[in-house]
Image 1 (spheres, rainbow, N blue to C red):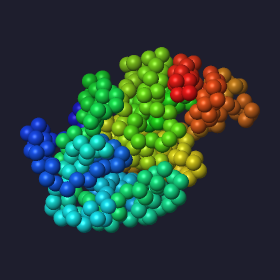
Image 2 (cartoon, rainbow, N blue to C red):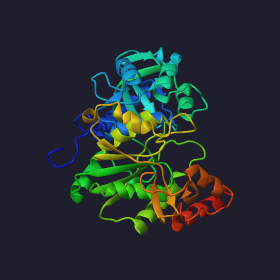
Image 3 (cartoon, rainbow, N blue to C red):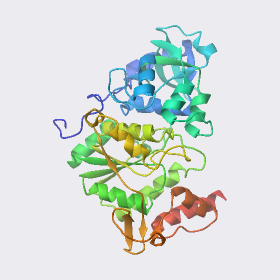
Image 4 (cartoon, rainbow, N blue to C red):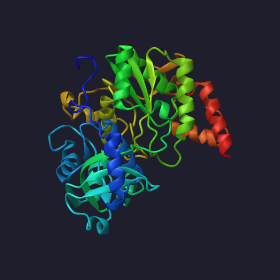
Length: 389
């Protein structure tokens, strides 16, 4: 712990890559004369996380040594654990015209300047290796693999100076930086904070495990991912309405905090579970909930692979404690949420429903059962589905 009681950031120092107004003006004036790379949505999300220090200790996009060691060993070249490559890519024809040491403008999809990258390295983007090591598959039906394969064939490594982490960001009132969440936790006197990663509305099983985790810590950070997701996921604005209502109705306001994570989902299963944990460490969390099939998609990963991968890493180097939860369900016999550890009920007395199953029910106009979701949340989801029809 630091002198203020909060967990140190990954690598020991919280990075801030956002330049001051004077430097920003200089970069904006120079940008029209620089080569330009238009970032894809995943890279835009990564840049925002780099900018605000959520990806500390990284100060820019990875060079070849970091890329290779991350893929092969889940480590940066300085031996610090890191699970996925953070890259800026370009088409070969574009990269060929960029010199080492040259500055490059990085823009969003509307050609607005986000940052300036000083190119220290150019190296081939080994997409096949990245897919095999990070996603454990080269199947382009996997959404994370599909994004990777569509990226440029050359990686540009080097530090970035960020002019604007994101234009017109969603949920600005709760889009807090790691420095801001850390300040909020310190003000509340929290020294232990558990983070809950989610890209779905919180159903009864999630509510149960977050409250179990909260019994072990001073506070709970509900930290939904609001960056790039895949088609079929419930929209972020609908999810945010669900989180706000659920927290107001069913959580202690003195021990619960809501903020958003502007990250892209990679659907990388075990590797992404580590990434999600390390990001939350930088936001000031000491514990991280890892449930069933964390960050998974389809049947690419085993049910508890995302928990087992933490056992392969040095706990002291990772520096955040994973809280591993079994698959939970509504137990008719005990009239409460339970897991195989906590009940001896028969299978027919266990109500299992996934987020996917609920989306299917909603699409058919069916109301999820009370054992799965709170009625207020069901109302919001039904209203959302009807509005789309």
